[in-house]
Length: 250
Length: 252
View (cartoon, each protein chain N blue to C red):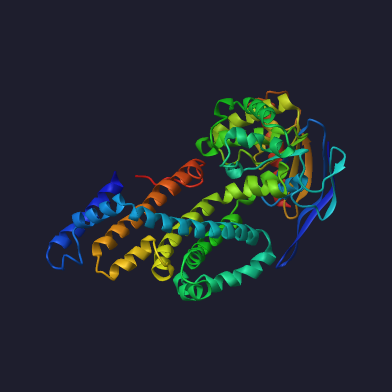
């Protein structure tokens, strides 16, 4: 579904060129949940933004569903970390319907679909609410519904739950796992939280900073729904933390 | 009812000064005298006629200013060339008080509505323009990215994202523009109006030492300004940016 081949990003600063992402390669299969994990500066968000098409890589190739990525496209939905990503002048329903409106879907039809998406994230009762009346967790759920509403094959998520409290975050992770099971989207999910990656991912891409490189690809072979307190879960967590700390000693 | 309280207190202070005997009653008429004059001017329709003339001038000027300010403001925010061309002009023209143009406009267009409306237009354009320009530049990049990812381009991006996102600034701009316009129209009418208008009637009353007429007109000027500021613009804010949580309501 997603093919990333030798992707690099170099940018100019007053002190010379900086290599942010260095020859990163990995794939994501159809309906696969891939987590990019790494400390800040490892280029995981930069990589996600390039998959989203916000800017092109300086070298390498990104293909989504066989087509080379050039710019933004409706084949990819994106959810950011910041709650402020929702449009405050639109209700939850209006936000979710935005992509369909851009596609030219008729009003009644797009509202029906938007309501369906809100039901998926358990917010159909709040369809008429403006974002500022919703909690942070609810706003992120609207953002997920909004990114799914126009039915992209790929869902890109940039630490969507990082700004939430621990309890809400766990609840959101459970909900996201449910939504993913129901929709079978290909997901690329950026996080610096190892437990989150083990809970959500089919496969974890461990990245190291300066320059951003892929250190390891770790498949998570745990049955779902996953138990974050099981021995196997903790084993995976240890393994990933091991990968992340060893790199710092180098 | 708090606005009523402050206004009542202000009137009471005025009344006690007027009754103190420190000033000639003809120059500082008591409120009942001024109220009487106001009542008779309202009753025979002269006040309405003056007010209507003034409102017509103010809204002609404001409409022109809003049109130019909105279009130019958004264009300046969007295209660097437009910004580079107009910004020096704006910086040079903005500090000139609109009333300083009055003699020039009178020379070019004669006494009357054209000169008056132009002065109002001049006063109201800059706050509208600067606020629109700033508002369009202050649109959160996150909204632009999110909208772009959902396929918004060109006109759809402008009307469905940039315009609502800039609206807190635009509404403030409109508010300031109305204030400036309302102040300018009274001055402009004193200098450039040939007959009728609230500013003109004050200026005319000076010739006959009719302080009560002046006060009556000032009261009407204040009242109309108050109604627009509180009701029209207040309602506009409440139904848009306040409802959307883009500006907060002050806490008690």
